Length: 57
Image (cartoon, rainbow, N blue to C red; front, side, top):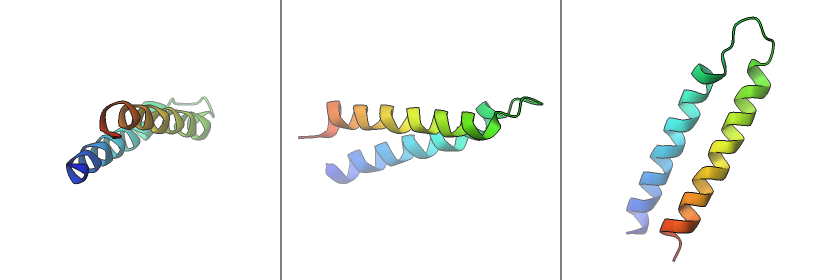
C-alpha cells in the first residue's frame, strides 16, 4: 500500500511541477522565475498535506 501511495503522490507532484512553467510564463513581466518557484513551493506544501492527511499511518 505504501508503494501505491508513493506512486500516486509522486505522479501528482510531477504533474504539478511540470505544469508550473506553463502557468508561470507571463510575457514581459520579468517574474517568470520567482513565480515558478512560488508555485512549485505551494505544490510541495499541498502535496505534503495530502500525504500527511491520507497516506501517513
